[in-house]
Every structure is written in structure tokens, then in C-alpha cells.
Amino acid sequence: MSTYHYLSLHQAWQTNQKLIHIYGVITRVDIPRPCNRGTDYKQRVWVTDQSAREINFGSGTHAEDEQNPNGSTNETKDVMIMFFGDRDVLLTNTKEGDIIRIHRLEKGEWQKRPQFVAKIGIIRGGSAAGGVARCHFALFRGFSENVNDDPLQEEPYQTSSAKYTFNVTDRQNVKRMREFIGQSSFREAALDNPFTVPVSHILQNDPKKINNADQYDLHCQVLEVKVFGDGRVILVVWDGSDNKPFPPELTNNGGGGKDEGQTQAG
Image (cartoon, rainbow, N blue to C red; front, side, top):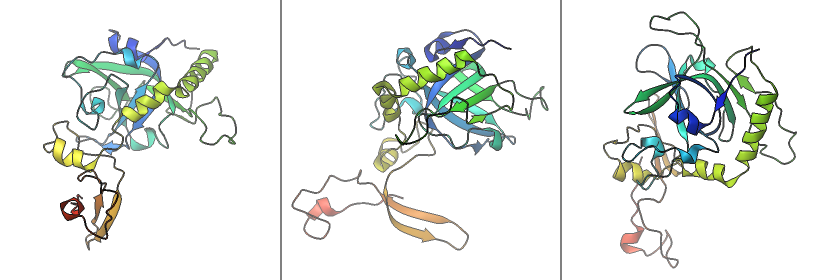
């Protein structure tokens, strides 16, 4: 049976090793999207652990995943991992607070900073085309949404391989991560991520997509739904971020002057 030495995220950030093994708690996960080239899909996953705050990205090197909605940079909270593979082998039914174990995660460099890449399943291109990637992951539930739910199972709910190891060390790691999830530090890491951003931040603070962000998560009110014959659907939405709040004595139905004129952003 293989024995794996797991690194904390802080250790993973500093090590010179090219293949590493980690445990982490997911703070955010994107849906799989087609790569610009080839047939693979890509999926961004952000993870944190007890050591993440110790990581020093360096000034001026924060990417969009370390940028908060008001444009200022936070202390390091989590690390992004880029997954590649067929869509059906990437992370599914995954939510914030889940625990992930990754074996043979590749560490490289991009824009003068570490980059973590997880290639899953069949390799489609390059000299190793047709082979199977050696990187594997396992996903565990990190917490129960309802106090009346059955106890969390120890075994993973999704794995990238039908054959996987799970021993005493893994049980201890999963237990440790679940204890971490119950602490305020994990909740802060999740809340500090721009999982949802104000519409005005997209339109005003990042008009030229300087953060290379082309997709955003929003919480907003749907004002109108426009359906076109070619199948396109446009939602006209508003979240209140482009206007000051109304004074208590005013409502949408009367008075207001300039403060009542609210723009709409789609």
C-alpha cells in the first residue's frame, strides 16, 4: 500500500517539489468549461486550510481570485487549483465546505508565482496522449447542513479513481479538516472570496476586465426577462449597488427626486 506525505498549503506554496499531496477545504468551485484548445474541460477550485494565512503572495501579484469586491487586496486566504480533464471526471455536486484530497498535484509557475494543476483522467494531447494522468482526487462532505442529518460518512462521496487508498491517516486528516470547518477562520476565508460581487463593481471598477474575469456570480433582483426567437434569453437585473439607499421617509412609489432614479444593469 502506498504511503503519502501530505503538505499544508503553506508548505505546498514554498516547496520545490513538482508533485505534491494535499488536503484542503473548498471555498469556491467553478463549473467545468471547455478549454480554448483541444477537447478538455477546465475547472477552477479554491481551497484553504489552517496554514493558508501564512502564505505571502507578494505585493502587486494578486490575481482576480485574491481580489475583494472593493478593489483592495486581502490577506491570503486560499489557493486556486486548475483542473483539466473530460467533463464527467471533474468535480460534480461539490459545494463550499467540502473536503478534497489530491494526490500527485503538479506544481509549476505562472506569472512568477506558483501554479497548481490537476490533470484528471485520459491525457488528450502531447507526448503522453492516450495515457492516463496520475493525479487523483477524493471528495468528502465537510459538514452537515441539518443537525438532524445522519453522521457524516468517512468514505469519499466522489473519487477520480475506482481504486483509492483510505487509511488511519486519511481518517485523521478528514477529522482535522472537519474541525477546521467549524472554526471562524474557515468561514472568513469563504466570505472573503468574491463568490458574489456587486453589479456596479463589474461595470465601474473593472470595465476593461483588468482582472481577466469574464464570469461573475451575482445576487440580484430580476426586473425583466427577454426571450428571443433564436433561443437567447436576457435577464435585466438590479442589485442596488449603483445607487444610494432611499431615505426612510421615501419609497419607490413617491417622492425621491434624483435619489429615486435607479439605473439598471444587465
